[in-house]
Amino acid sequence: MSQQDMTTAPDLKSWVESANSADAEFPIQNLPYGVFSTKNGAPRVGVAIGDSILDLALLSAEGALKCKADIFARASLNDFIAEGPAAWRSVREQISALLSASNQTLQGNAALRATALVPQAEATMLLPVDIPGYTDFYSSKEHATNVGMLFRDPKNALLPNWSEIPIGYNGRASSVIVSGTPVRRPNGQIKPPDQDRPVFGACRKLDLELETGFIVGVPNALGEPIPCEEAEKHIFGMVLLNDWSARDFQAWEYVPLGPFNAKTFATTISPWVVTMDALAPFRTAQPKQDPQPLAYLQHGGEHAFDIQLEAQLRPQGAAEPTTIARTNFKYMYWTMAQQLAHHTVSGCNTRVGDLMGSGTISGPTPDSLGSLLEMTFNGRDPITLKTGEKRAFIEDGDELTLRGWCQGQGYRVGFGACSGVVLPAHSVK
Image 1 (cartoon, rainbow, N blue to C red):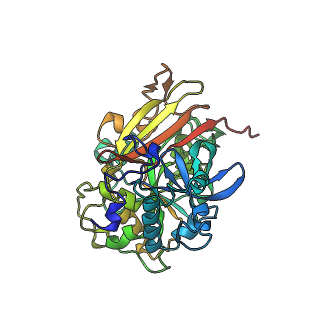
Image 2: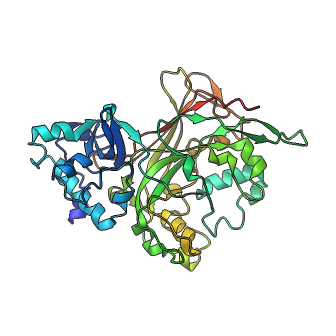
Image 3: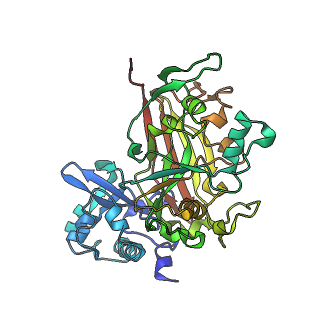
């Protein structure tokens, strides 16, 4: 077994006891990166292990971690990511060794251990990367079909180009926010079907989009496309992503150029970036593609990942949430590699920290739909929550939470929560 494989060995255990339970989101096989702060400390980079955070800035300063000086004493992961795959691999192997139950370097140093391990409950998680650009795709065949059936002839639910190219659009990077940040209901134009002109007001059809996102780790130069077979080497890791959507704004504005204010107001991501090394054991076959993609979108092997996903809705004051969707990333028709290859085939350059959203992830069953638009047939058939309340779309005070994990042999690789509470719209005259 190679050193890379050793970091994901199922029997690997940590001296951090909370990392060893079968349902822990952050076992030693995971080691996701994030940026955090504490009451008396500046923002810095850490790795999640069990219910704690390993302070990489401190370990680096103490000489316990061999890496570029001060690379983790930063308010984003970008500088570390820019060091490239060899640095990612080296640091991951060092962290894995330091946290291993058989290693005494940190385990046996009580003073360093006491300061290097920060309880997650005492930390504030920050946006993990500085995001230069954000692109959202539309790559779930089930989702695209469901939406097409809602708004077009069901016999022609998919437009002719959908099966030929990964459809996407350039979103708004400035409004990408970290989990836990409240989301303000947006104002905008709505075109009621019984009126000649639009009205202005607060969104009436606020929705979630259950997605994942990947972070670009190795950029490409302007004019130099990334080959599909090489694309995954350019990806640093993945996050959960909720691309909040104002469906009523979208219905009015998307012709002829696509969504604008329906999407610009907020996109929530989880604070932990799960690396491609941690996800490697969960690689699986992607759905069969018909017709066969054009040559530049072809890749051999397996390029999907078995990531179980859930969406939960908790009304204001409710004791517990209702799980409203259960789906899986492996259902995605277009792979991350194909998305990145298509994005750059025109010569478009990417930058370290660029965020690429998967698009809403829906599965083949009624309980695996990734948006309320689909679940409620555009509001026609509201869903019932545990409290007995009904929801056609999201109401003020509702908390939406996405969760995701890969199930290993005796362990799981989790992403943490991706959540946000909806606040009332601003009063605009």
